[in-house]
Length: 425
Image (cartoon, rainbow, N blue to C red; front, side):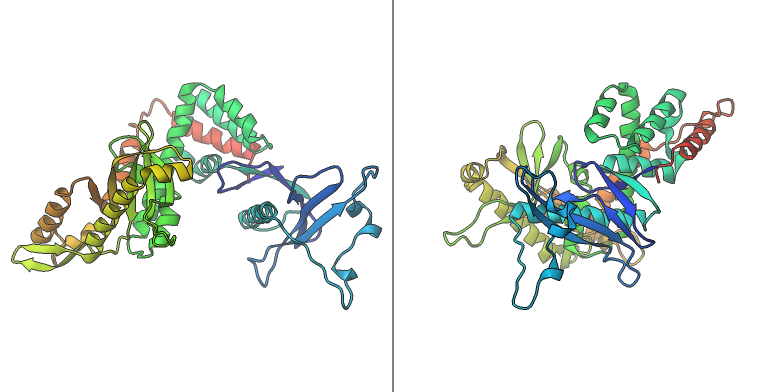
């Protein structure tokens, strides 16, 4: 049987064979640290380990660098008599193995996949098992169907259900990413739309749940890296035109001749059609929106909000001043026509009074201030959350029950049978 595991990278990279050597260890498919030649091979030979004392330390292995003559039929590792290891090092000797940058990167990527694999499968299975690496979309499909089959309305017809079952079979038999794309390309547009809608809805639900659970989280790095990078489409919901993530932590100019003082924007989004960019600054839901009461019915804005506005305006001016140089030095294609600025900050619950409803003075001060800004959009985290929830509610509306047409119950039963026939986990 073949199994699947998730991979956070954009493109999957094949399969991994795991062969148990004991209850707590297993040999794993070696991976190359550099491209193999006729005479040289540089690889890492991993071992998965169930480490009871330190569960996170689940991978061991050895780096193997081999050189053979052009006339030799095998590499030295296939002949134990020719292998040199740490055991052969004596007093006064030294063993050094230098990694080039690409070799170090290949080692990192390979180890990352193995740690994630061990975490996903939760242990070592007896015998030989092949684990097929999937991208996030495929993983989301499997999780959606396994966790809540009744929510998968995409399988309400016999034709679409057959499609899902075939897709599950393909995903769990080692089909490569290229082969899977070719198969999907031959499917009916309606079926693909149903698949895409189900996956998008599931992603929106997860994003809404994660945002709501962390509205008291004041860690800016969490929001940047764990939410807005993970769910890149979230910020694009703010724009009225089609925008997509262009870059994060992007240099927008401002360095002095000493190479110091450069401006780094949290996110740059780009219009998919015109290539014009927008600048996005991220604060946290706990960041204050208002300062002290200024007069009887007015409040000043907080230093964090006014500072964020000054910051994005500085970024915008900097990129306008150095637009030509940045585009030439980076080689990137983008436009900067009066870039729109977006600030995601705070929570409107701050504007509430003691009775739980909005304090009119606080609300008017905040709304009057942000609505007078030109070229700058200020949106709170709970407002962004509500946008996602509204979209979910629109897409997730249940069809009316029809007693004479028990198609959903039949489809769900068939789905369970599909798992019995070809279980991916």
